[in-house]
Length: 408
Length: 147
Ligand SMILES: Cc1ncc(COP(=O)(O)O)c(C=O)c1O
Image (cartoon, rainbow over the protein chains, first blue to last red):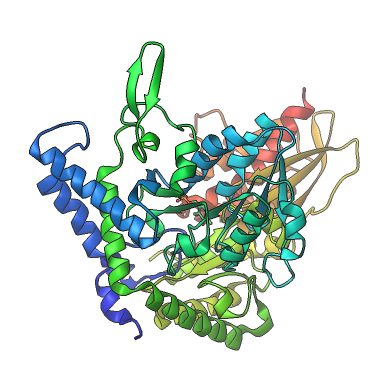
């Protein structure tokens, strides 16, 4: 079954926004997605009718709210096929999830003489937390390079993994769109005695995620890229791993006992959720998961492959060599995220002209400066699509690029 | 609807397409680097200052049309000027970009000429940073040569 995109678009109020009297073409979903009514309504209804702090109070409404919050945790656990809801830790965003992995697991396990493996296509969120810790602990960071066709070059992976304690990598590049062989990477890590940490920011919103089939040990992702609200992210990790990890943030909610001279941690997942959590946002994320399940992750992926094909053909048919798309050409190996160079026009100028046509793309380094240096671009323009993107969005992009040509 | 012709005036595109004073100067000219971390634009300003006068100036680097055109126009106006005038022009430019208030200390006879064309940038707040990148780097260079 193909998606009824027109009907889906009606569920996203922002998509009917007009600017300057004209419709908008939102092509920045890799950055953050729009929200369907069911998510917006779940959050406002909860605040209007059921809001209460959770966990700490014994009145009826508090336990009702706690149940809603824990219900959302179960939904998220089901969505990624976790072994148990207690493996799902709510954070502020994927960035905090990766910092948690580094500061908790990394701090306890990495020291002089140790090594971890990252890749050349990581987002800063999966680089800097490790560099911060490496500066302090003196472990080595090794890098999986790229092939000329924008895949990970796995030819020396076993060598890179030798003696390494972890590999942390993105399941899909937010710049190139490349979908990485997550399962193969996890298997290679385990064969070398390392754990596998997956930055799932760009894949979890767009395709079926199964942490068991993947064989991952940790998975980080953000709610706001998957139709949910900002302010909440997820770190999933295997229970045994979370159990062995020291706490990250300290405070209320994460303890079972505090005395003047010591404390003991609460059970999972509370151990990693210090302070009042983003209750409303978690409820919203739960509603987003329901929405994505209703639409169907397989259908979403299929739609995005179709859109990738459409966009590729439309852009290259009109502009040929004048447009350079940085990323794999095979739509089965990539998501619907296109970083491109247009003639020799600077990406900021490209995005400025596109903006005039209500075509919203992102220009810049996309928080992946090492990757940008490697592909030899200081910046790119990036158009990225989601379940609600349609041919009209792509056509508007293609037409607006004509105007870029006429100005520059 | 705002008009892109306001932003991309012909004189700006001209400086972008054929930048003035693009290149480098050998030491003892000073070299100051500036960057806009948000967009990855990078610039180097080379300054040859003697007897309180900017004898020569060059810029190199890469960036969008606004940052390149602004740097080009800047070098054209400051070349050969006494430092006091250069600082006054920079101040007037930042006032034009609305990032500095007119405190009444800028001499009124300071003319920006072509640079006035960059006024259209003000309507696009994220681009103001592009327009002032070269100027801030120039000022930093002046500060380090005078100490
Ligand atoms: C691959 C990848 N990792 C991490 C992040 C960080 O996500 P957040 O900003 O929601 O923490 C992003 C988002 O831009 C991303 O695309």
